[in-house]
Image (cartoon, rainbow, N blue to C red; front, side, top):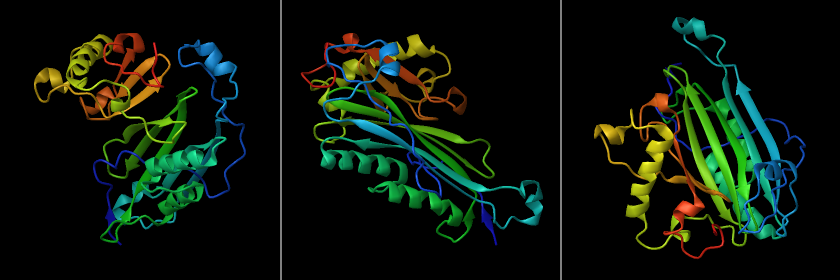
Length: 281
């Protein structure tokens, strides 16, 4: 059987879990806060309270591997290769079950590419045991998806989905990140246009460029060499302190720079912020 080496860039946003039922784990309890209040990290991390929305996050894990693969004889150095997939996910619970279900479906879609539930994620993980491309060749792949609570308030929930993928024959694996910001009253994803006034982008982009250079240095970026113009990335996360913008691998520079970020305090965003329930001064 001909083995197809994994192509150069596995799609960025996928997700995670094992061939057993999800393991029981202590729920992650987000912190209740007034939107006008900034809590110290020690409070956020050590003394969580129950939100009026009833927000609870329960961690789960699914993982699968398949070692019964046909490896060509000329690749005997990789005879111990196993296809592997792992998802470390978060399930959202709210007083409003319909909104919770809506958010969970979006988390599932970020991981698997399909709206669904934990069974959808479980099936996605099991598919690593029978992974073929359109030509029917076996894909030799190992990937991992990890959900992490970034912040929450009375109005929003922010989750980071980190991904890592390595295909046999690649020079190195590929990391990716997706930020999921949800309105806890509607279940809708929060967009930058929900935060900022009209025509904000040109000025904010210029300000963000200055902040990026302050935080990451000036050398080695493609916008400095003239290969491309500086732009804001698609991925951002809301916190009580402000906004963090996140770039993907190869989006703004070579592989060695990783996944660069820009952190901007909400006070520095004041001139562009419109009245919104998420970021308040």
